[in-house]
Length: 346
Image (cartoon, rainbow, N blue to C red; front, side):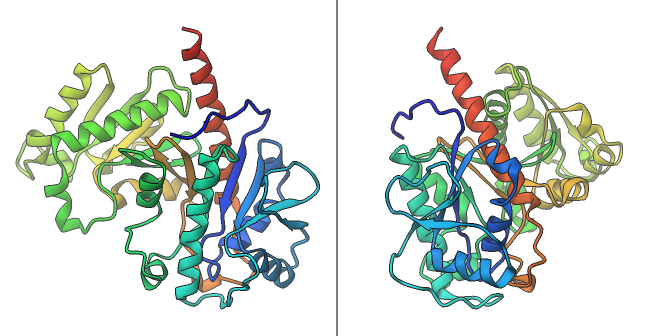
């Protein structure tokens, strides 16, 4: 369990470097120039100051960075960089896969979580990584979410994508489409609904959230004619969720649900698989989407995009999603503080 943190006026946010051959360092530098970020939190970066100095010079970003292995978040005129391998300058090659960049991206996550556990950070925002580069470095984890789950001592997690008030939780995430049906069980759906419901109440301060649940098959199975998963799995899971006082509705045919923009009537949507939920969300808010790891003891958000190797180092990366990820992490920290204070006075 993380140590007890003193009350602070602003949340302290640790931002991991991500893959330094991608656009992570660029969008971090651009985000840290945004007044909207500094108005809601005290940010610091975990990574290599050589990387950030390199990109700042290359892209003409004027920002004062200062390396410090001590107390990382000190408000002032500079941004602190907490080093992961002091006195070693990594080989930067924008747009290329690298064993070294994969290793650095993992070390940055591990250090950020350590700082959270030590009470120096209230939340972690992770820049995009390359799973292939991480694997080249010998780390065979599926992704950052799974790493954060293990490192933070969590027992369950649900991926939730947020674009403004449009929130989508995923019942299954990075699986081939042919495997989705067998991975959908009553217990899986009930757990994901419980995580999303709890996150909406605590992290988003919605006291009585409504959650729409999508069907898996076309027309939500059309009473079993186009697929049996709705009758066998989804509807029974919804009944069990309602018995636990969750306000869930569905299953809805996904095409009509999004086509009629019914998502606007709900606080969140639970999609059955990755693209079912992410395509409509990204159509609504491609540049402001944020990935939230709901259910973890640590507050973790991330931009809802990848490393963008094709434009790395060109200076054209849009920082909007990173800015929104930092601001949302700050908001969740404050909501959790308020919920903790409320429970303490009961």
